[in-house]
Image (cartoon, rainbow, N blue to C red; front, side):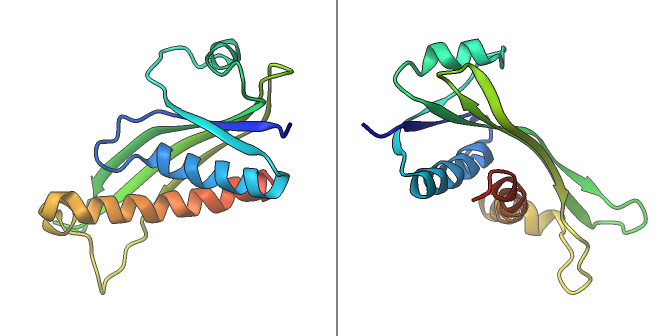
Length: 154
């Protein structure tokens, strides 16, 4: 039987879950590269991030990709009135459940770069169901994914 990998994420991000988005990508890539079977996912809304809690919630899995969106925020530039940037902070852990240990762990904090040709305004970020904010957050998540994939050698 193939080893199994599961995905654990915190989903407190509304319509677009950064943690779920990133966890899906990482779990799929891990499954493909290492010939693992993807078994299940779980939305974590627990206070304790201890390995023992993760192990007890995934008794049939061998590994878990644990993703957490620690923080995302919209900030304004002090000297550029009406212009904003987005900051995203995430954490990723690959947990070996059989040995009850964290095999790999990383943190990522990224922020949008100012682009004079397309400055982020309040309306651009928050109109149309916050599509602009979701788009910018997804771009930042993609840059964190590159960092995590290098860390996991994917």
